[in-house]
Amino acid sequence: MKKVGLTLLFLLILAPAILAVDVLIPVGPTVISFVALMKGEVESSIPIEVRFWKNFDQVNAELASEKFDIVVLPVSLGANLYMKGADLRLVGVTLWKAFYIVTKDVKINTIEDLRGMDIYTPQGKGQTADVLIRYLLNRHGMDTEKDVSIKYSSPQEIVALLAKGVVNVAILPEPFVTLSVQKSNASIALDLQQLWAEETGLPPRVPITGVFALGKSLQVIPLSICEAINGIKKSALYAMSNPEHSSYLAVDYLGGMDENILKESLQRTLYEYRSVFEVKDEVTKYFEVVSSVAPQAMPEVPDENFFAK
Image (cartoon, rainbow, N blue to C red; front, side, top):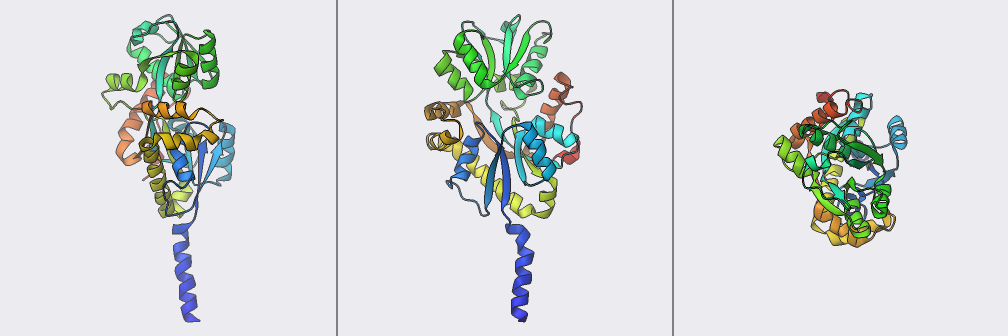
């Protein structure tokens, strides 16, 4: 009886370390970096349940319920939610390269060539494309309210408008860049990550998508969170190392988008998990830029507690 009691106690002590981890990821291209984990192409030492969020209202509802452990979000969105009181901590960054300026029927060789243009970007103010183009235009002496016209729409709609010739200049993330080239006869003009590097002296990458842990989960099941992060890291590496198979696996999650488009898009995409300990300075620099060019989106830079310890 004593032996049974000790065994039960031992299991209870270990239980927090082996609990399953609930991970929320956005509907869309991010699934490419998670599909190896979801389909068992990479191993995880703990059970990981991957669920999808479709819009920011759903993210807010999930935060209110706290029925998840890890959520994948645009880094600026995660920061804003944190500053509004959400129990989130940035653990790492997994997407670094995806955004390009694409054109149709016009020639753009430099940022200066954008003067007087209508520029279509995905989503809205404070999002990655908007922040990068405003920063680059400002660095080249242009007023983003007078010298250009920045307009917003969904990536899918922008691709359609390019195809119709209604839009001539747009900023898109992959795989919509590749889709616009193949379906809308658009051209890739400029790599925003490279331009960012030239202006900042940082590597040619931008912290686009972050991996955030619920603060409570970091305290209660830290070992499970660490093991889940290891799985996420391996899955991102698998996507970059096995683009053909990853694209094949991802098709069912992306509305049947052509797997050849997905495969080609990975040539211009960088999924690479980097812990916050490695890239904190880069993330902070990005937040400073967001705050300067889109203060309504980020009035201030998050404090030290935002970064997982």
